[in-house]
Length: 189
Image (cartoon, rainbow, N blue to C red; front, side, top):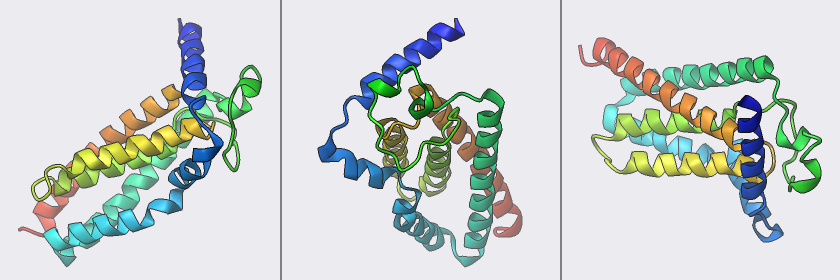
């Protein structure tokens, strides 16, 4: 059963990865780059500061640093635990796929990009929902784009992405709850 699921995952990867073309490669390489969205992160921190104040901003910065560290480290535990090669390192499909990423990496289950961006989307989207009710949908869409970019460039299977986004959503919610508790205890009391 697991083998069949992995076969379907490879087939779906080849289908989605096959949508790529040289015309769009540059855009997807920009989207997949971790540094591209520093202005977005800065803007989100500014919105949090604007709505919650300077004292709260310090809590947000510490919690976000903890959240990203948490999602990164758990992702690495899964990658080392499952040792599933990335598609760009899988001999059985290497000749059928498009690989345009800068590097391949060794293991891919599950995606750190997908978990980090989804955690950020859920965390900030929930904190800002009372002020910008549709922002969470925009942030989730952004996270899905970043996650798809990992398939496009050839470094993750769809299952890596789905599991990464699911873990990221749970982490974002968990750290949102932690932040609400910290705000209640240290800011509004």
